Image (cartoon, rainbow, N blue to C red; front, top):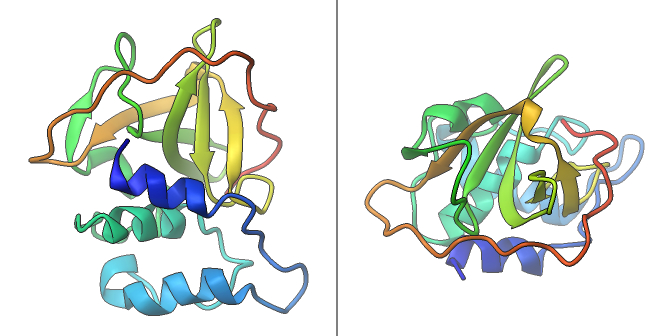
Length: 166
């Protein structure tokens, strides 16, 4: 398993704090990565943080995230492109279209119907695994210069459908 996916799995259950308060764990990611990596000074967990989560995990693995990593769609041109269908490596960076922007996370497994179980941040305001259909998938990426890992396994059961991500 990739180092970034190991880090991502260790953070499952991390949630943003409702209202004006912020989760100190999420804020630590923003503070440690800083505006130079994220493209902005990260000010609070009410700001979409899927890109922040991906950047934290990739950075933890010693790999440089894309410029303006806070933006989910910035990941669509980062690293090396992978085919959208066929073999999908465990831990591949998946970028999705959504109303008003994009979403980014890591491939955790594949379902029998071809949909992807994605480990990501800000999926229902938390780090978790959710099911995404491929019709929203705009890119699969892998870190440049890193050997592509093994294929993601077929899940025994699909994850809960995504209900909201930013």
